[in-house]
Amino acid sequence: MFSKTSLNPNYRKNDWGYKIDKFVQENKQDLAALVWGLFLEWDKSNDILGIDLKPKPHFVRCSRQAIEELNENVNCNLQEVLGILDGLKREEEIAAIAIGSGEIKLINFKPELPPPLCFEQATATLDQLIKQLEENLNNLFTLN
Image (cartoon, rainbow, N blue to C red; front, top):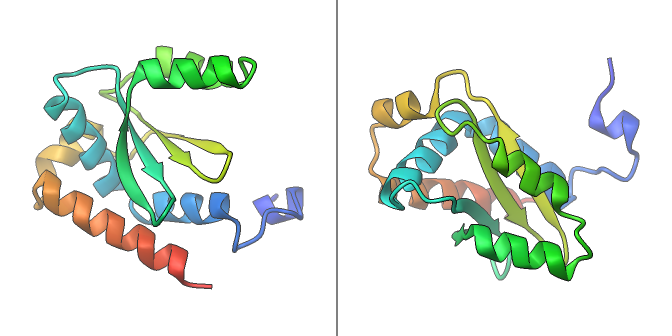
């Protein structure tokens, strides 16, 4: 069996991509609930959740237009991301973008329960989910 570290020796526990993967693994249901709740709050727009790592990890709203403009500015290197977003089945899977220093990472997964059910079962409000998940992110990124 392969692990990320065995396939890519540059992928270390202190890399921001590794930390984002760890955050997603540890918070799948709450993250799915948040993404679905924001989708509803944003009137079912094509916007997606962003995780901006600077100055400290926090959530941002990423419009489809902003992602398309970024794609144009980076010689269309985000075509695959746009393709995944075009085919996204929001009732079944989650998509978000993590934004690091000069890099982005697509977060895309299918939670055990459908996102609407994750949201329905959440015991926290959207504001509480945002606060808790941002706190989890900050704790992960301040640990060495």
